[in-house]
Image 1 (tube, rainbow, N blue to C red):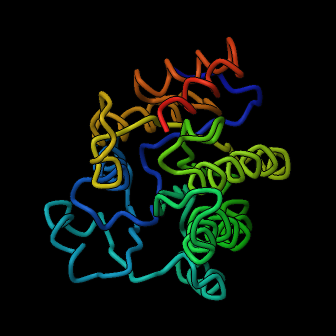
Image 2 (cartoon, one colour):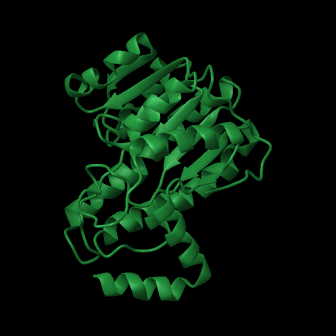
Length: 253
C-alpha cells in the first residue's frame, strides 16, 4: 500500500549510490533493502554497522558493489565526517533502529537510547548528507518509520513514541528538502519477520519483500509506503476510527 507523491521529485534506483544504516543483521529490513537495491541496479551501496567483522560476510556475494563501514548512528558528531567520505551518495536509507520494550513509565535510560537511535541519529545524518544529496541532483531520503508511528503499541510505548517523532520529522524534512529536489520516502511497516519482531504473535512479511517494496516506491516517486498487509490493515483501521484502535491496542496490554 502506498500513496503517490504529491511533489514532482523522481528517483531512479538503477545506477544509484546508496547509504543504508544499521544493516548488520542477516535477518533484517536493512539486509533486505541492500539486496533489493543491488538487484534493481544500484551502482554501489555503503552499509554502516557497529561491527564490520560480523556484517562483512553478509554481503560478500555482492563483491565491490557493497562497502561495509563502521558507524554508530548515536555518535552524531561523526555524521559530518562520514558525509565527507561518501561524496557520491544520492540515496540515504535510515534503517538503524532500536526496540527496548520500555513502557511510558519505564526505564528512562532505555527510552533515551531509543530516541538517540531512532530520532536523533537519523536527523544528524540527514543534516550532514543533505548538501551531498543536493550536489548530486537532489536524490532521495528514505526513513524506516513504523506503523507504530501512528498509535502506541502496548509492548513498546517508548518505541512507538520515538517512531511518532520520526514520522513528524519525516514530514518536516519533506518540506525543508523540497527546494533541492530531494524525494523523501517514509516507510511504515507493521511486524516484519526480523529479530526485533520475533516475539510479536502476528502475521509477518519478509524483509526481502519490504526491500523490494522500498525500491518500487522510490522508482515510483511515492512519499509514503505501507509495505506489508498487517501494517496496511492496522493503518486503515486507525484512519477509520482512531479511538477504537487505541482501545483495541489497550486491551492487548
